[in-house]
Amino acid sequence: MKYSLSVVVLILLLYSCAEELIKKPENLIPEDKMVLIFKEMAIVNAAKGTNIGQLKDNGIEPTIYIFEKFEIDSAQFVDSDRYYASKPLIYETMYKDVETSLENQRLQLESEKMLNDSLSRLKKVEKKNLKNISKDSTSSKVIPQ
Image (cartoon, rainbow, N blue to C red; front, side, top):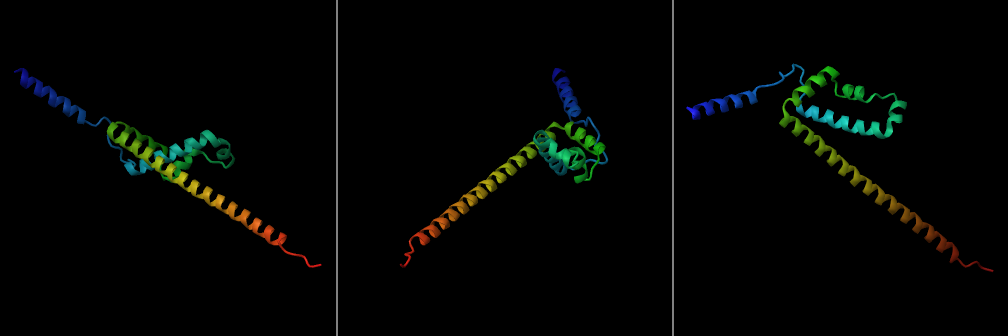
């Protein structure tokens, strides 16, 4: 009797965990697009923290900019965000994807910066060598008397 009661309780618990807390909205933003939106929001929020003056000078409202870029509205975003937040494993995966994407972008930008820096250094060295060569060629000329 105890065993069968335990099994029934376990089945009820599992069934209740599978129940959706929030119904899927009709205008749900797909997961991959939400990841891009979250990534863009992270970048814009970082920009707001460092260059809020430039955003204001250019008349850019970050949230409106993102909604227009992805062709969504605030209600659609809120509904989709709430739905995904009610599914913690999916939500966590989405944020890990955002983190991975941002890290990859950071590494790519650092690599490009290092390449540009090394090209700049190489140009400076070449310029210096050309100046030295031209100096040497003018000073070694013998002026006839």
